[in-house]
Image (cartoon, rainbow, N blue to C red):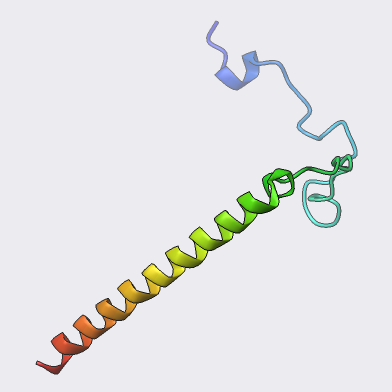
Length: 81
């Protein structure tokens, strides 16, 4: 007895059993638990450590600005040729 394959498989209902939307309004809406207030590393640093960090950031920005200016000047010279 050669039955077609689809006749030998159990029949299942393809409709969802829950009333959950699959598209449109409410799909991305999720209930989220409010997060506890987080302490940032900045808040836990001493005032001296904060000043050191800020100064090192300022120095990095100055060095980066000088490197950018040199690169721009180099590209400008190449563009004139």
